[in-house]
Image (cartoon, rainbow, N blue to C red):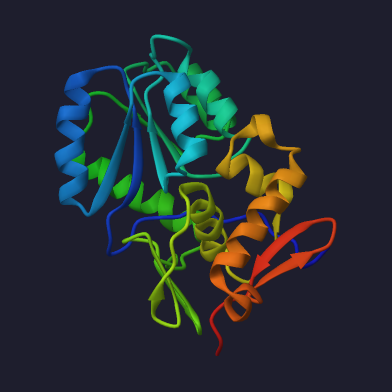
Length: 241
């Protein structure tokens, strides 16, 4: 099916887009948060694998920095479970320097592997490279505009004909995922796993209800931009021209 493409993960541009840092060492978070924020990112913190998986499914990040030595599960297992529902870039940060560990992580879907201790400028460069690769060299969307609909992903604002639209967090996450993949079909499974997590991958009727809520709140003209691909998923029509 030529129109069916997997969704592209978001990536930082000139706005504070989200980086998920997964590490149980408080000093890593104290060091990385101000560094990443100074580089223009927003930072989400997780100290366990379970917390990382929950956050990644509830509020999809643009990139994950993942330590392997977590207290509740091995980081390799976290990586495998992440890859079950998202293609977001993952950079492993680990003190494990054995070649076998690196090969295992890269084969499991990690985009890069950086040993601790690391140079912060090198890490930022590797992040930029992973994000460029994830988008095929294209700049990702942070501001969507196709009249009458406008969505600002940095400020989390939705407007129709200039008037703000109040969406619930789940409704917003659905619309934001479609904005990031405008003009691309996103399958039911991709929407469900990205917004609710892999446990809800088959709750298609649940998804239909939420899409209906989003369309109702957008109003008839803007709702017409959210098209149904019968039996497959949904597509948001992209900006014209």
